[in-house]
Image (cartoon, rainbow, N blue to C red; front, side, top):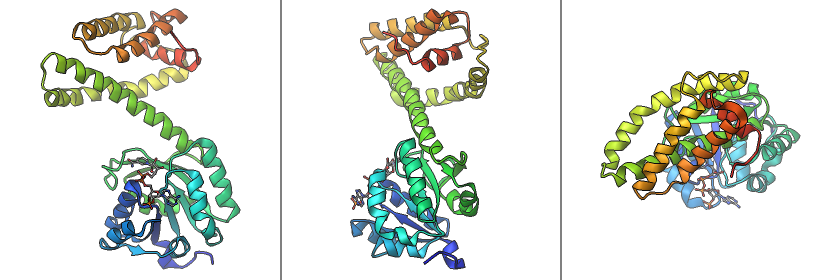
Length: 298
Ligand SMILES: NC(=O)c1ccc[n+]([C@@H]2O[C@H](COP(=O)([O-])OP(=O)(O)OC[C@H]3O[C@@H](n4cnc5c(N)ncnc54)[C@H](OP(=O)(O)O)[C@@H]3O)[C@@H](O)[C@H]2O)c1
């Protein structure tokens, strides 16, 4: 059976109701979309049925109800196992796979979906489960542009759903890159928290000041990305040498306070390598050149 009736066009099926899938289904329901759900353990579907979802007894049944099939499972092998029996039902529908995986996984899944006549979007939820359904929850998607356009309104009920391009592998590339970005920022935050706490500062008070400082940090990003693109690193935001000296203060103060120096050691290593590469007088975004070379600094 292919999907061509109007009712199905407005409907969405969510397969996999773990922490993420449950939040996805709740966001679709809150957006007013007819939502069918399936989960291996039926209890999670029951809880959603109480909130207005339709429970499907099988994956086949879930797929048959909806033009848009959203899958949230631990990995791509599980996606294949779960969707395999319903593959014959996928023709004419759109499969959105929000399970985590690699660019290679995404390319293979897109091929598999195409082989069964389905449009494919690979995607990643970038804002945990907390924000799902709110406008600031970032979802990155790549693959069929026409499928994204067709289902954009439904996908926007999840949050800020962004189409990155036609290559399905782009979504997992962004996913891992943004995960690293968030961890970099959080590692810096955790270090700063340990440092101020060692000086008797109230962590919550510091958290508020640190949050107010972040717009300065994010204001650098677009400009530094342009610098990286051109390979030209003006020193408007301080030179590598100036920042290297400041990192020594951070490392020394951390040591004096008796806390770990793992995080300053990473910063020191990056700036040292940039200086060794002749970028001492360049702006700090020149560090990207050191990273891009793939060399590891001791
Ligand atoms: N949670 C987050 O904050 C978050 C954020 C970003 C991305 N993600 C991604 O979202 C995906 C789902 O994560 P989650 O946090 O929702 O995981 P989870 O809470 O552990 O739920 C896993 C889901 O997969 C189902 N499942 C596992 N193995 C299965 C199998 N062999 N056959 C059928 N169903 C199976 C589970 O069914 P049962 O209920 O029957 O066990 C459950 O519905 C993952 O790829 C994760 O990386 C999660």
